[in-house]
Image 1 (tube, rainbow over the protein chains, first blue to last red):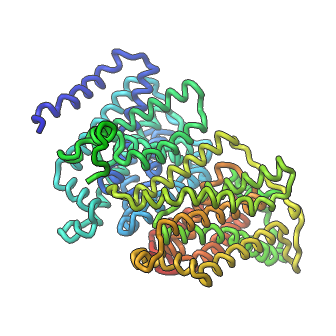
Image 2: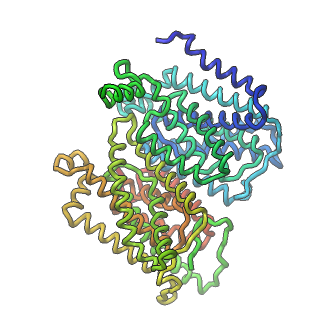
Length: 328
Length: 312
């Protein structure tokens, strides 16, 4: 058992590094750091529902896009609201949509929910493509604000807040226990008196709202959005891969997966440009993780039980003495 | 003439017909829609069967359709053969590939991870992404048409003129679907498949080897889906991005019919083809995807277990 304070060392170190980052790196790497934080936050938002509640959402990009489009519409002509006012507006729009989508479908088996969210995201993409007020396929421009440090620190704030909320709600509260209980056995959780429909809906709305905040910051940051860049299925794909790769249902899983995959993405982009090959890599990564690493990278270092040790220990044990395989 | 029914950028609304032509246009749209619906039915029936037996929602369905289309394109472009010759090749080739993938899906679905259902869904999602990315990398974003002996011909019955290729595709689709129904309802193995879809435990107790059956069903489904892909490529055209559209079709049908319902899939597929044809003709083809997604979404909200039959 680790002491209370030892567990604080890594989070504090991360926050210190994040706070001091702009003094050490140039603007180019600061942009990459900003993007990495955004993806770590988005992966965490997907993990709230996918990892802790066990419901796969294939339309998370819908909420990212709703946040982005709300901010773009409210900041652009003729409304011209200040940036930080548009975030609550995006949250409100997203929360309403999440209740409408999740309310009926979360009561059903996960498969219907996966299809419903996917259909919702694709419908929104098509809607944004054909409507005039969204700028159609050409998208919308936002008033440019060229201050990398502003966006970096805004993203740090959003990401740290996301992880704090996740830590408090899902790892250290009764609410988190309810969510995990319904993931592990929904009928049993219901029999224990948990209102599973309500808990699922709360988790879903929280997850959606988180994604919309990142969408709002992203829109202001890149100053130009179109349906493909904020609603596109690739955005959801990437979140799913990040969480699966990092590890479902943990706090560090999405952080590892999000930062790691985004940096790999940028390195590929630097060497080969914007390539379809990356999509194939994403797909292969999902397949390989599901087949060989269902607990993700974080799972390699987590002790499943004191007896069997970590997956790494077992692998080493197998290599050395042909130890007992399989999980208990 | 390959039509571009795909989500085109511009809203190419058709010119307003005169009064006398209105009924003809209506009939023509209806028949075109039903013919396409027939082709959609072939792969959605397989999709439903796969769900019934494997309990896996196959995101990769659109990937198999597109692969079948590319096979037809290469057979016609490189070997200078008729595109329709790709149909048996597609069935054998992708049937074999599906036969190899089936057991993997079965293992993941029945593994002892925390959420096998979720992992299997993620696996087919990954497979779909892999197929899409791989095809985009290998073959680029270009759209290809598949010439066949019947391309350009048309069939006129009374006031209605439909492209011959659509009629032929619908006939093929009826043959494929009919064969599948005969196999399911008139053979012992079909009985085993239906029994497994109904209750896996009982079927296993009766001596059905579920694992081997799953491999066979997935192979059968992948083969049929690729054949439907050949037909779709001959009617429209093929590029790696349209896979998404066919996955949507399968989901739409599955939701309308109720997941796993094979009979309902036939009706729902015909409905889908008709809806798409009418929206394309009367509103504009760029609205057809929006209309389908919106309908799918509304059905899920109003009657989430399907409107044709109670799903699983």
